[in-house]
Length: 637
Image (cartoon, rainbow, N blue to C red; front, side, top):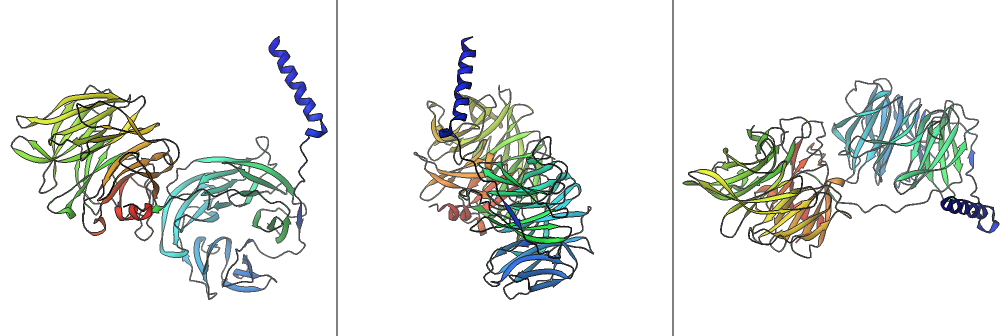
């Protein structure tokens, strides 16, 4: 009864507050829309951002005779003859990149209007297997331009079409998209990397537009009874802070304001008087928004006295381009996992990258990314390499991998002269789910394998050989509270770094006889987003750096490898448009070396696993990035 009385009292207080004139929240005036009377004959039109070389230019439009740039007084300032449907554009300092659809050929195309008011010859994308209903451009932070194609039956594609606003000679398909049916309109907000696609009788959806993004959608607005739209969602206009959506059947324009990572409804205005309105374009003015509204009769200008609240842009992360990608691993799906770099000390340019196929074995690649060896020995998860292992009467270099088929250490001899790997057996462990692994070479020259289990258990083995066969002696145990995987040892300073995936990176003494005291290097939160995955050490002339795969935001974090572990920054690996190499995302394992391997790798090489192979889609692989690019981006010594 007491709880009921307290609840009733709270309700009475709340009602009193609502009825008090002093506490009443002032009403916010509803947005009002004023639509002009002049109708322009066009099927599609967009406002142009201000152009230094075309000061009078106001908008682009599709006319019966071609693509046109229209001035303040409605005059045609420039025209590309042809029969086109729909359009989108991006502006830069000396030109306009325009995407459209050739009505006769039913092919998407790119063209550019330059500062001399000359149109480039159209560059056509290959014909699609579906009828294109809509298209939209996206420019990423590295100024690569992409074109999204939307088909009515739930099919779509993303293409790389231009670099720095200049159309590529050969556009490249990035990925195929499974989109909603009954879609005909899309728009991309570049700053938030958001692709918006309509589904007429359902609502509006948001996707990540990035070339490496997963295909995941979230609803923005839904048709009644699940949302506030009355009949059908069609065209939209987007910015980082505002979204306008046309409800064509009800002749309404819905307004949304971004709040944190969500859209909130800010109002609705009537489009009464328009004949089946479907498209909208918007630009910000000192008084609110100027609109272009397109219906069956053509386009009309309008003004809306609503100003969305501005949000601060998120800090940008440098994007680096890979110079090489390896051949794909043989297995489909999530298969590639962890690389290790083997150095050919006599001929560094012949060095190799080893990579695990966790569904089948161990692979070796040359520095051009070509597969040169494949050992189909089982489900290998992580791999590491150390030189100078005494195997009976001969000295070899050693690669060790965690074998998930047998919960064992799987050992491979590497011929120092040729780089050829040979299976030299396995060492059993008591682990139930063997997972991550790294090697450590102590000051006495003994090589240790540190291996972990998903339950947090770590085992450290001193490796050797008996009668010419590899052997291992368990010399230490320790444990983290939750699941680990990645680890790397600093042989020079006898330190071990381990990654507790959802918690932190820890440092501890790597020596077998040392106590296992954990020192926090960097925690999840801030630049590191879980999962913490692969880790590697770069030994520089002045400083050593720890490189960490921050899988939760597809980035790589660099910290100094000595306490107090100063954060030096983050970077992403994006696509290389010139070489036709996609970026890297959802990285599991990585490795780095400071050894000079010649050519672009003179200051070292970073290798990362790519969890999403794009451009074109295919089996997972590994990407190579020169350390010089990392050092320049993060101002490293």
